[in-house]
Image (cartoon, rainbow, N blue to C red; front, top):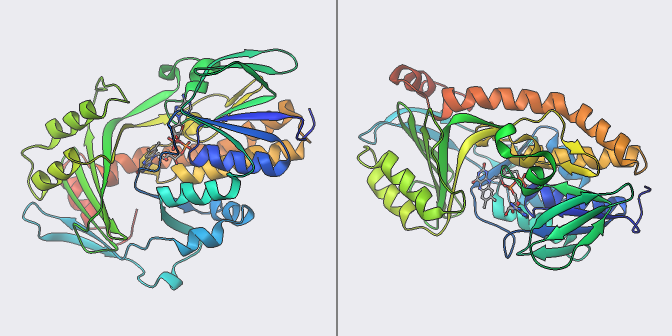
Length: 374
Ligand SMILES: Cc1cc2nc3c(=O)[nH]c(=O)nc-3n(C[C@H](O)[C@H](O)[C@H](O)COP(=O)(O)OP(=O)(O)OC[C@H]3O[C@@H](n4cnc5c(N)ncnc54)[C@H](O)[C@@H]3O)c2cc1C
């Protein structure tokens, strides 16, 4: 299979991994279709980071200047006591122009819109639909959809997140690949400042954490808690998820009651377990996975967007290097990206326990005494 408009690629998921992959596959010269379960791009969510050499990928994608123009800038992180006094603070660089270029924080919805802007006129989008079946022949994949007639594609790329539908169809159930990190989190963004802009505040008791992050007139309210066992819940049932947060946090000190009320009344709510996806191989036949679907490191890594952007470019580079021979390209993609993913996942496992949700008073005290960001 050569790289040409004759050859078609279906990408499942229109978030950071899906849109980045669509960008590269279109630029290489394939005919690209993106299918997304939601009726429109899902723009909820807090700030995301681009770190390290992922910033170089953003430069290659010609989106770096736009990302930089919209970057967020945290000036101070404060660790709070129950009575709202400050137990410790980290002061960060406060001049946006002096910030290093190898770490850019940006609102998730702005990132999605910047990526969409690069490809929306060149790629076919199917919103409100999903893949229900994949049948592979020697020449193509026959893809069945929830809505509409089956179609043939040369390659299918699953960019549909931690609970990937493509992974389930092509590689089997999530339980084989998901590693629960014994914690859950929710993120709600409210359109007002609950703390001064460009600051973060964290309040912890053993096994529970509340974080506020204020920027652009908004505040992210993030609840996190430890749970030794998985809590059964439907990941599309938001009321059920809000109830879990309410049960975990009601009765806690600091500003918890007011923050819970903001969260329970908000339409903007994202909940998931801290978990990692670990797979021996991210490709099978004509199917490949990119982003959280393949190697989610959990939000504790702060690398979800970076892994997606880097992974999409790695897959594209492998296809280009092997002139569209997807079998060789997929081998290359698996081999070259894996060492980086392993380091990020190992760091995130430590981060959940030590920095986000310390398990003891002593661990909280040590975390609060830090002078450098984690
Ligand atoms: C609404 C939302 C809010 C988020 N908020 C945060 C946040 O605040 N902080 C944070 O660290 N991370 C957040 N994340 C996760 C973060 O975006 C990812 O960790 C990271 O960017 C990797 O992106 P991804 O594209 O691999 O996966 P995701 O961003 O999870 O995107 C997966 C996409 O696939 C779509 N999809 C799912 N199943 C199917 C299916 N069967 N068929 C077709 N499409 C499907 C989803 O609707 C989604 O658009 C959020 C994700 C979403 C979807």
